[in-house]
Image (tube, rainbow, N blue to C red; front, side):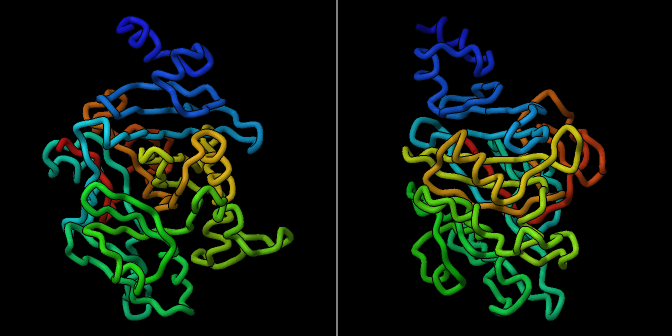
Length: 308
């Protein structure tokens, strides 16, 4: 059995046998994904610049499938008050294995009010300060939370997050999937006849209706967590809008819940000692406008998988 397991580990989805799929690949993937086991209970799925028919475009997607109940690792939300690259943050975290950029951290221009909710280890970092009629008000539609071994994704607002009995909370938007319902597919309200690019950049219809790099977190029925990085702004990777990302997650992973995080130039996925880059960045961040691993944007918060 050990040899069968190892033989299945590094081949693409097209070559999995049904028995091997049950052992290693419980997710119903239907594209040419490659799979690597990083640690027990920690898998890395990669769709490398594959043409996706329903989007009529090439996509490059990295997904970490984390089973906290089957591994010696745990999730950690991180914000040390510095604005830095994800790979540099990782160097400051003992026993970190995987990292994904976090949520929106810009301030509303008027009054520099916070657009997001962030709580770490029972310490409130940011509460939502923008008014309900602000152009930024949509940016905290949902939140991922942790309390001891319990995790979840909920729809809410500042009051709900303040009252939530959880030690760690990070907001995001849009809510892509809620109890298997595809909320993200209906987030954009603009008519199809409207040119979304002509709207203000922070208009939610433009922000989520146009293809961009995307980061997201999702929870499967068995309690497993997905960290998702979708590349974009390149011929090799077109990126996705909220509707496309929602449909993509449903088709390939069928999560119970999923939440969109900060994307665009912030989208970065890091794996310790990965050899495809000097920094461990495995996706293609876009801040240098090149399709390489060197275009990291400086961010403020992140999610890490660390050894217990």
